[in-house]
Amino acid sequence: MVLAGGVDYPYTIGDRDLLERVGDAGALVSELPTGSVPTRHRFLARSRLLGAMSATTVVVEADARSGALP
View 1 (cartoon, rainbow, N blue to C red):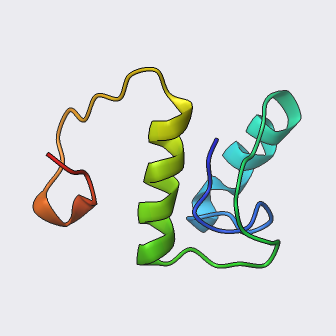
View 2: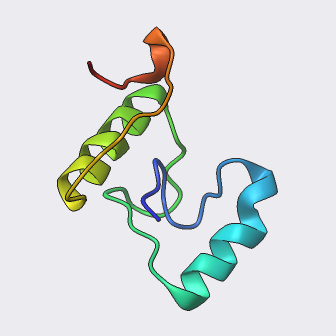
C-alpha cells in the first residue's frame, strides 16, 4: 500500500486497522518520514508512485479534481 503521509499516519483514522493488517502481511510504502501528514500535493505524488510501480493503471471513474490525468 502506497501512502500519502508517513507510514505511522493512517489516513483516514478509520483505516488504522487496515494499515496494520497490510503492514503485517505486505508492505507499507511512503516517500515521507514518519509523522508526515497527507496533503493534496502528497496525494498527487502518491499517484505518481503508484503509476511507476504498476504495469497497467486503469482509472474507472474520477472527477476533475481527483488528480487523475486523461
